[in-house]
Image (cartoon, rainbow, N blue to C red; front, side):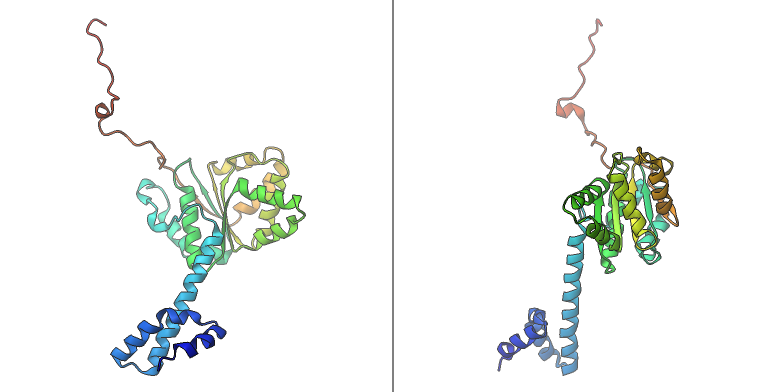
Length: 262
């Protein structure tokens, strides 16, 4: 007798409906291998646990709002021979998350700062950590929009609680009021409470330039960001350099020959 019709409502009631995805295959496997009932049950439970973990992973990945799927396995370390590779791999273990320490990544445009930040975020997601990725401009805009609807405090509290917040392109645009105050408030709320990754095109001594209208806010914010921070400097050629043509003559770009009488 096929027990599936009777099992369906019971598994649904127990929120184990996913077992049906592998029940037929596992049942066939158990019969062929003459498994003990406990071994068969263990297989089904293992499948359910794996399914739930994958569902949680996909949900965390979606909430992180990464621009693209950038992983550490895809990062080209060979282009950045001066990069502290040992520190990068240590950060990938997630120790800084337990320490609630900042990670500051600087370097010229196109050297892979966003890739590296998202790759560390992806590692955190794999470890079961909730992550939010945002550019600095989008982050401050979202806080300002929340103020307009009377939900600023709730938005700030939500961002303050995220175990890992990645702020990309800090200092790309000068922070004007109220963006400078909003970013300061967020950094202050997260200080020693949650880990934050920040990327910037500015060298560390230039970070105060992001707060052109309020040096006091700059000092207070950067003091908190730099305290116990892990720092990575990416110094190399841009990934976005234009491709070189193998043979310009074939593409109609050959320079005209100089006249003999010139």
